[in-house]
Image (cartoon, rainbow, N blue to C red; front, side, top):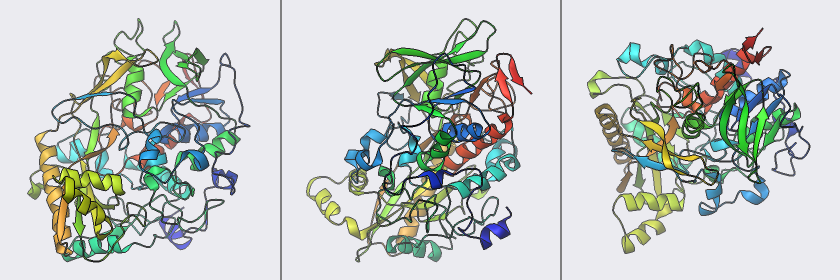
Length: 557
């Protein structure tokens, strides 16, 4: 559908090949089909086994199930029952996050957990903020355009149509978008709060253009999904079902078309046959028993730490240093985004939590401007930390004791704005295996991360921009916290085994029936939240696989 009709028919048309919105139960938030889903035996040679029920794995499974594939998803975390499991409480939401032990290192070690990884059916999108921007065309050509990073082996045109389909499936609400590849969204923008209005005022005073959205949050009704009620707990699991995640946007349809999800099952390695092709995935089930699910095709969608970890733990005589790692590429080029935030205080109550966390956004600084002294750029968006998150801001600014109590009492007078910096892919920022093992006997993942000078300059410049916005809006006081968000990379796509783990079709070099369908394949990070692009790449992969079967010797037409 063209942009003209997308604009004219705002919110009135849904996607034709995904019935998830109608399959949801209006009386319950549980995933429909959990009790009645198809069950396969472990010795059934299914068409596809997917590791991970998040953004990439869920879309891939749904698409291929509709094409007639027999699909099993192995998921480390639980089946959620939102009416009981998801609570309107920050501390009570920790089970949503991947908090199992990981080791961090490097000059700029990255805090792991609630800000960058999830555990359970639906993945980290269960607790993301709902923000769904596209990547820019330039994100796929940073080496050619700006002399940094890497070029992707695909073009923006290869995923543009998939962006459009997914924006209709989620659905995405927002104003017409002028940046990158200009486009419209299928749903109208949400109203914004007084807190966001203050920040927009400051940006306007500085000549910074902003837009409302884009968020994957229902504006109106969408099948059996209701309108957002602006309760502010997007990062704790949406108990309303207004915020999009694979749990409600793709998995209901997947289960209805024969997908089986095995929750509480930890994948430990990919098994190869004598010919060097994968023939299944070994996992520990919920009782701790080791199982092997046989499959013609394996797709790994465990994200940027667990995917490299699984590959490195799948060493064999043919792949002595880990599956697909004969050229030492697995685990390299892991990226995060700089995500500094600045908060301003005003005399009137603003109650920043009363809306989706990302309300208004600017991508005016997204592209390289040589006058700034660094390559690539950053985006700006409003954010809305809840009280525990707010206390982290206060502590980061050096306030303790009585001063901290006063800042906490003053919470409703504050509004917060943040950035997402594109930090560059570097080979020594990587995932490796530690000597220590977890309860399944799998070596714990270690992540080392160090920023380069370009990264540091980008983050400093952007932090000053958002601080200036607060002052331009008349803030009486300003607090700043420097932080990171979003994991990407670790098994990137490329043009040859010497520079990548998979090819342009996500196929692992040297293993014809193993594919990677998550954010670990990204060669660069961009300044946009990665969820929508992960889903778009998985949708593209499914399209290229549909109608084929990947046998032991490779793709059979």
